[in-house]
Image (cartoon, rainbow, N blue to C red; front, side, top):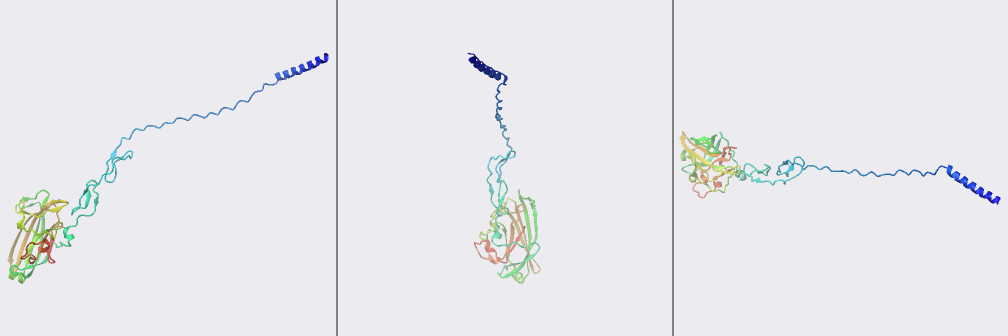
Length: 295
């Protein structure tokens, strides 16, 4: 019995020691958990709202579409060229942007290989025929003077016109002229519209101009693409001085201001003697003289 008590006592003692040990040992402490890592919320972004451009449009041209000078936006498409036809003075050009294209029209005189190169104050040999007999006679033609005025014999030029005058002297002194006199044939041509196939029109067939003493040419002249009537006046006189037959010819034209296409020609009268239905080219040969009053 005593032995059992001792065992129980020992057991109790051990239990008490264990309890005591449990009381004296520091309590177990679990480690602090690692702080949780938090993902920051994304910062919301915003796109600013821009006010629409108050366009400042640069007008469209033939080369560029309409464009805003502020933002570069484009609007109406580029324009189409509006071509003005070429004429004898200017090549074709656009009425909107003035771009030109090609060349002016070729003057009729150039196209047909003609030259109007006779100068003022120079005597040129003039081949024609005698008045009574168709023998060859040679005289001289001199363009004495060219003048431009805005009135003629108290007549003012019409709007856009001016008077262009020329004075010629023709002299014959060879034996044929002294025996038979001389025939002379003169006419006016146009440098630009010259056509050797055109029918000859005689001055007597022209209609009267509104300017007294003038007639209106049978065909308008074309200047910068516009048709203009040409108004013509002339007088011719002849007189003997010693052994020389002197002829004077005064031409006056009312033409557009600065027009440079008037040509006076002297040709051999044998070319038209007793001939009908003549063309302009029938009047001309290698001996013909051409005086361009301007140009």
